[in-house]
Length: 194
Image (tube, rainbow, N blue to C red; front, side, top):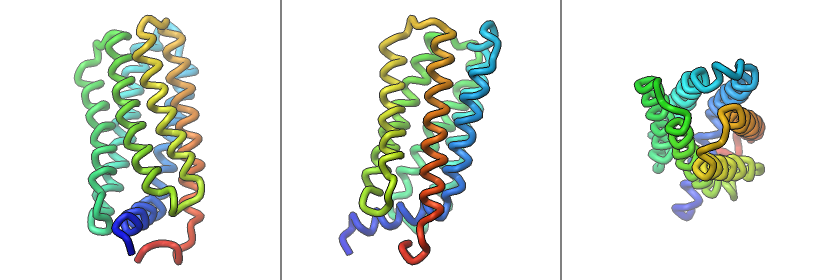
């Protein structure tokens, strides 16, 4: 078996064994989106900072847990670990500096989204021959990068528009992760690497 095939099989095995982590991450993202949609306009930015921090930290922690649980099974578990560390760092930085202005938060979230999107696309490319529906992870990564680019290009956007855009991104990203997790759950055990 080629080294790339082995890596792809290991990655599929890790994600399919831990499909429920992707499901939790998707649900957390959907909840984050709904919370932002229901906030009173005057409190939206302050609350968004705290909700974003909690979401990024939980999402990152779940990803780190998956990477650490799979480190003996996978040669390239560090990609998953880095993906999670980015989220944890974003969460910690958000809580340690709660007085962020809207523009600073905007760039902060934009950088987080771009890095996360790149890592999602790398993961999806490695899965492309192993599972059906890897396009959902690629689409999630592309959405993350586009979202980050949009935020960087439009720093003067109004607070209400920013909250709605972030809420929509979180909701769509969450739905994609829930769908991907259910596809991974459906993979047969005989297709998994031993």
